[in-house]
Length: 453
Image (cartoon, rainbow, N blue to C red):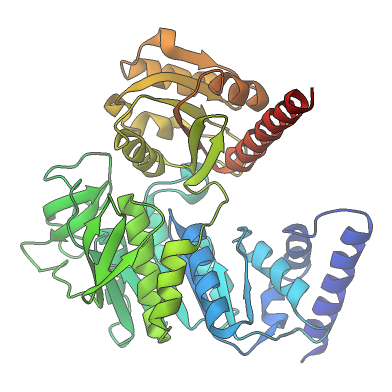
């Protein structure tokens, strides 16, 4: 280990300890400081165990958490960034916390959520064994630019990568990356068979309409959601893929899916959740994970961090889901509409730096599909923007209540009983969880007081 790397680790440890002594969270900041001092700080770590990285626009936190749960049950000793911090600085902070003074990481596996644009940055310095690519949609345009920009960044990394690559065969933006390195034989596609809610025409805004190799318009047999579905190019054959794993018989009422004749029950029934499970199953298959562990994970594990998280409050049910782009919002609306009863919606929209200051993406949400939605409460720093967007979709303005303060918004939502949904974008999701839990605690305290009276 060179002098520079030794000093990098030593300095990093001092930063972490100092922050904790003064009561600060040593999350992303130590890595931010260290990478500012030494742009190759990640190279200072000695990692000998396999690294599995998960990336994509939507679903990477959920898939990372599921794989972490599975690999922990498989080997016991894993390191993961289950709470996010998926940029190079966040991963640097995580490794700083877990390494010894010589920069050595002692674990059986590293399972790392990684921001799409940071895949080349991180894994040019850390040796990656498996890269899982879920999907690519428009997201945070003021930070990431157009989808093609991200595709080309990842392709540049994959051009010379010879490790395992797990790819969504039903997303043309992802499937094209299987051809990045013709010499890499470790390409593993997953696909999901047509489900009951699939459509013959696009239901929402999407990307990937043209073949990336010959420019011909792609032909779709069906759309699962957005541009995800079974597609092919009539001219060059792009999309005619035989998947390594094909999920079949998606049953939303159980809910469950089938792979290789074996049925797996799941916690949720949305189609994008099924694609997440397909990615998890495919990745686990590469490491010969016992099927009993997979059954346990699919049936019992919950992420519980604002990803289809369920709450029960005073005779009301609430599902909270992160939506940081049109596709995420549209999928939550689908889940909401599939519940055949009256319901109410809380939509929390922020425009902080991590969200992207440009919130024009809300105009690509298909809000005209509201079904049995009796009332909408909007909140966040751009509460009025999302309220106007919903009104412009044709929804009755008299049923929209604007409450910029989250505590006020949650309290307003629960002035009635029944089924409720909450959509929150990136920096809004954790504050929304906190406000919901705070309200739950106040209801319980009030109940206890009345019971003791």
